[in-house]
Each structure stands twice: as C-alpha cells, then as structure tokens.
Length: 102
Image (cartoon, rainbow, N blue to C red; front, side, top):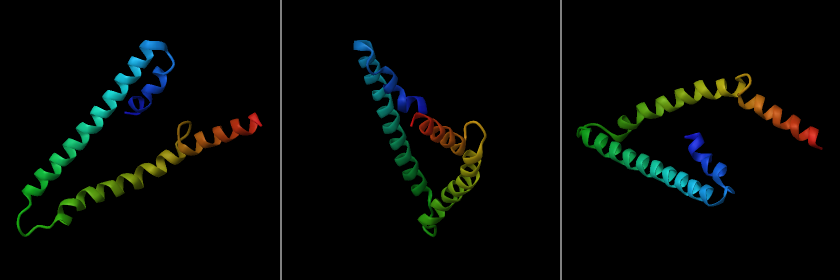
C-alpha cells in the first residue's frame, strides 16, 4: 500500500506515458479506498445483524478496540527504536543531513 500511495510521484514528469501511469495509479488507489470502505460497511452491517437483543454495540466494538491498543503498544515502541529503519534512526539521519547542508 505504501508504494501504491506514492506511485504517482514516480510517474510524474515522464511525458504522456508517465501521465497515463500516474492516472492509473490514482485510479487503483481510489478503487482500493472504495473497496475497503465498502467492505468495512458490509462487515459492520453483518456484525450488527448478528447481535442478539440483549447484546450491546460496545460488546461488538470492544475486541476491536483491545486489539488496536495491543497493536499500538507493541509496534510503536518497536518501530521507534528499530535500528536502521526505525523512526528515531531516520529522524537522526535527516537531521544530520540538514545540518550538513547548512
């Protein structure tokens, strides 16, 4: 998804073929967004229809919230300090390059 989100940048300025490539990448990007939104709404409707009368919407949402919190608590610290590709390393390299350019 990352390459899809920045793919139109690599196609820009390459003449007519690059413009067509950029438009194609944008079309694919918008189709992915529309498809994911459609599937999200579909899954919410199906999940809500599976609820029993004594269940609440919070019981439906709680496992998703718990999994998101667990994911953030796990991956944010790991990606922050990961050597060579972590946020801190990349920030430090950018800061060093900016200082050298001055």
